[in-house]
Image 1 (cartoon, protein in one colour):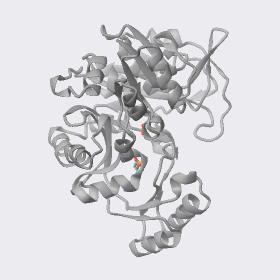
Image 2 (spheres, protein in one colour):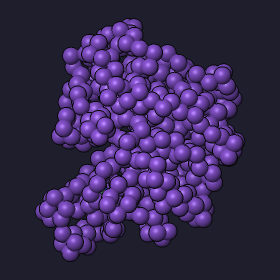
Image 3 (spheres, rainbow, N blue to C red):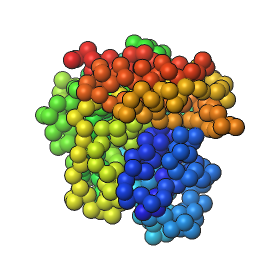
Image 4 (cartoon, rainbow, N blue to C red):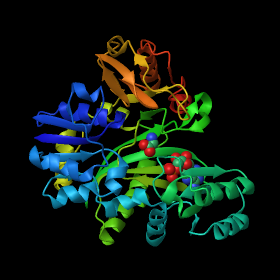
Length: 425
Ligand code: AMP
Ligand code: GLY
């Protein structure tokens, strides 16, 4: 098969790594890719928002499967354009990806079908949003409706913070059109977990659970980021809770989307809060998590490409996946200053040495480029050092052993990835 992966992050490096291992893969392209991906795939300098050019490339290169990594091209309709051109595609249509693209749509869907989630209100006018906040009191959560690169959710500890959040989103338009509507939500308490499944419109194959570390610094301090590390599986999701997530959240959502003529195809990511009242869905994403994808795929024994192709062709009922019993953990290395201002262009050394720590260690690139043969950092989150071992604690030790061999003074990472799972063991 000829495969085209869309995206340039650590998630896409992990996808390319798993796809390239498949005996079914004859040729692998990635648009646009990064320095790590370039070792596995032919990188095509096309940004994911150039939808028509991506489709033209896939047609002219007789691509058998397009795998879409990030949410923005999904919400913009890349999967629809591929299908209209007769291309097989892994990723939901724009109508189905609205489950991530509009939080208001997602909440209304949950309400219509009795899917457990936080109580909420939906507003396109700031005064009405504030009146609702005043009526319900703090703590309360204010969210921009549309895509905001993971920054559109503000947890507010008092009423004034919540009023300021409404102004930030609706009046200052911090997230542009994504904030023309806000969702105000009850603040749920509990432990948060991510759960991933493959869906082919109808059938569901569970992948695995993971836990992310969103805060920038140790002890979950500092500003929120796209994710500074993750591990899989998440010990909090035991067998009975996993069943509850499948039966009360995932299955009803897939059925609801089908009933509303938005059949979902691709990976569905449920962000779940395990509350004393049972699991409740915080959000859905229409893609793999980044960095959660990296430990997830390090645990997968089966052929990923075969599974993605089966999903694209509506044949998931023939798929069952095998997993390593081990845990896997990723530590993200970011440029100093991230998620605020940072200077790109610094040199990274020691990567070969770091990868040599073991066969079960992978260094996924999230934002790198090659400059005269040297690897340079080009963004905020730059590397995902990922390790697999019999326990989260052992995987953590292995990952930090590799991290310590990387020579990159301009970078930083958290030193406590996995703490919650280790504290449980
Ligand atoms: P979202 O982008 O909707 O996943 O929200 C980002 C993060 O905000 C989640 O991963 C949670 O940590 C937090 N969050 C979102 N909604 C709520 C809620 N209703 N109660 C508590 N925390 C929330
Ligand atoms: N790591 C969180 C996300 O991918 O949304």
